[in-house]
Image (cartoon, rainbow, N blue to C red):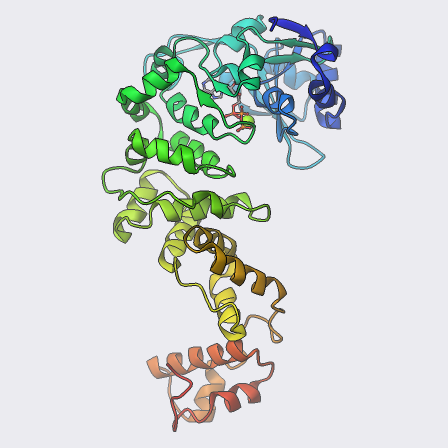
Length: 428
Ligand code: ATP
Ligand code: MG
């Protein structure tokens, strides 16, 4: 468990990480090395690679200053220059390469941000400021060395979540680390069990209040990352028990059963839909008016907020998976919330939600597309009526018939709808 070890003796996973770097990552590393600077891959990428997971982002630490990095890699964007971070856009896809100058954090006085950051030259010092041992390893890609002063690899192999240093001190520096502790327990590279000192601190309950110093944006971001993981049920139960959920969502939040939260996940659900689904489930018993103000307090974007509220309202209203008319209406009404809605309903009734999902996969697109075939003018002419609420009602009912029966021409819509003046059998 040495602090420093050669990669090629440390096994396949790190070798794969180094040999499989994207061209953007390798060229960034090469440019820094050619410029005479030291460079390390740090944090999540090393952790995930050691667990055999292909990392989605590569974080790089260097002793070059941000200005020196930009001089060597002109396409780097100064995304967090006050903390020494620049981002290199990747040509290959959505992988992000963040390059951060080695730093040691100054004193924390407000429980959320260091008062000052000092750019440094020591990778060991840089690892010291990181939150958990599993996140505090560095890989030197040039000399092919793993630097692991806090025994992160040992903790990783034993699935232990341990803070770098005293947990209470580290949580007091930055209250967000409390939430990060829960998030990493459920991390897909784990799960991890908190070590004894961490358990003791979390069980005491007092650390919840440290979160109060943290900006709502950071809290929401951390919550959203957590809610995207495949298995979250156990950690959410723990967070509820420790008072974290009620702290995050505020006094108006009404607790819910967390059973089935893992059923929201499957390989096909996209991360956005999964997050929206789980947020909707978490808020499903909270008063609808409080729901939206609570999401506003968390600074959720308008679009995401509407998605959560819409999914909440339709929970438990799945269509009959054998009824194509209902399925067609359901699909159209939900639009781009469909994935989130089905993911949320899978928690409450997995077999029905899966049956609906399977029926929707084979349901052909609407023959006439998504727009109404019969417009207001046509209705006014045909039925000799004026504009007004009656027109609106008829218009939407004709549209509903069109979708339900998948009609493709105007005459069929009128025909199937029947005699509007005479019968209202089609108009529930
Ligand atoms: P993920 O794959 O989930 O993004 P990650 O490890 O990359 O995991 P990030 O939140 O992206 O997590 O942070 C990158 C690294 O920065 C972490 O691995 C950790 O070393 C360090 N870090 C991030 N936030 C904090 C914090 N609040 N306190 C201390 N270290 C932190
Ligand atoms: Mg990351």
